[in-house]
Structure formats: structure tokens, C-alpha cells
Length: 272
Image 1 (cartoon, helix red, strand yellow):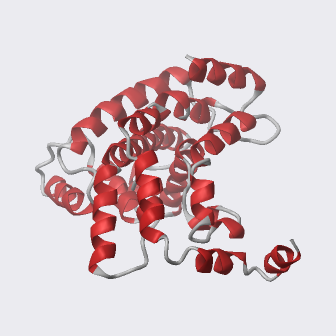
Image 2 (cartoon, one colour; image 1 turned 135 degrees about the horizontal axis):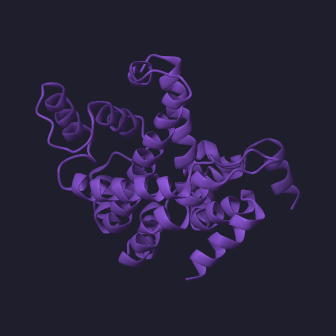
Image 3 (cartoon, helix red, strand yellow; image 1 turned 180 degrees about the horizontal axis):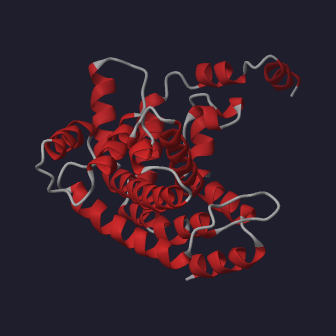
């Protein structure tokens, strides 16, 4: 106990945990895959546009300011539209930065077959490029530091087995991004901002729009990055102890931040 206390005080617990399991990487990783690489896990995440996203967009807590206070009917319309476009997008290259860039270039050249505007395509591309729309939990689970052929094979096998979860998470993040982008942009234009300013990636208006979308994504889909966790849970072993509870933790935090009436509504939806 004294040793643990000293490690915590010196911020050395992460190093100690890494040393403890330095030889168990492959076993640990396959354990992760065996538990998360299932269709069931993917399906659970796939329902977040119904169980999480609407409540974050609709809520407005008077004391804390949590939520975005959008109209419920508009929210569900935009989520349904974004969901249908994200499903199509998964088969037309909108979930991959290289192919998404090709689609963006084609749209700018006048050959837009995606159903999205050029501004929406550019926003999706930028947010995918910076990692906001990538399947973060899968990446965090399968990330490895080694560069040997064995490390590469294990990483590739893990990513393949985690495909159901990764595909579901990538899709739900795109749905959250597209629906929030459209709702927030429409509100900002109604407030007097110009569409050209909101489409300019260097403008303050665009940055404000981007911050709104990313806030909703993180509140409804989660942020699995190392920086978004206590230091003691950033080590090789400790991060996996926390990862198994991240999805329930996101849900509990969201419900806790909602106004009372919406707490009851979301609990009813999740209970179904």
C-alpha cells in the first residue's frame, strides 16, 4: 500500500503497470478482441443515435447549460436523413479519408453524387482526418507500440475481428456529426451569420460550428483518447481496465447531466 501511494504521488503508476505486463501484450490484446469483437457489441453501439444523440441535442439544463436545445422534430428528421446517408456512405467511400478526399474533389469539380453538399463533404473530411469520426475505441484497443512482424499480424487480426464494432462506431459518429452540423448551421444562419463564413474553415464562425459538433459527438458517442482519462488509467494495463466501462460511463454521465424530465425519457428508451 505504501509503495502504491508513493507511485501515485510521483505519477509513476503508469510506468509500473507498463513494466508489470510488458510481456503480455498479445494475450491482453486477444482478450480484448474476444470480448469486444462481436456483432452484439456493434449492435449496441449502433443504437446510440436513438438512445443518446437526441437527448444531448434536445436537452437544455437551466443551471449547467448542458445540451443544445434543438427542436425534437427537427432533431429526429436530421438524424434519420444522416443515418440513411451514412449507410450509403459506408459503401461509397465516405468513411475513409483517401476515398472521401476523392469524393470531395469530384464534388468541387461539379460531379457530386453523394447527396451531401460540398461544405458537408469538406467538414466530414476534416473531422475524419483529425480523428473525431474514426472508431476511437477500436483504435485505442488495438493500438500497439511494437514494430515487429508479429506485432503487425496481431494488430491486423485484431482490427479484422473488431470490424462489427468499428463499423458501427464510425457510422454513429458520422450520423452525430452530420445531423448536428445541419442543425447548428441552420441556427447560426438564423442568428445572422453568413453561409459563406460558416463554410470558411479559417473563419471564427466555422470554428464555432466545429466546436458545437465536436461537443455533441463527445457527449453522445464518447471520447476514448488517453488524455480524457485519469493519469493512472493511461498505462498499458490500466487503460484496458477503464475501457471496458467507458460505454456505460458515457451513458451514466449523459443521463446525470440531463434535466429531470429528460432523464426519465431516456431511461424509458434505454429500458426498451
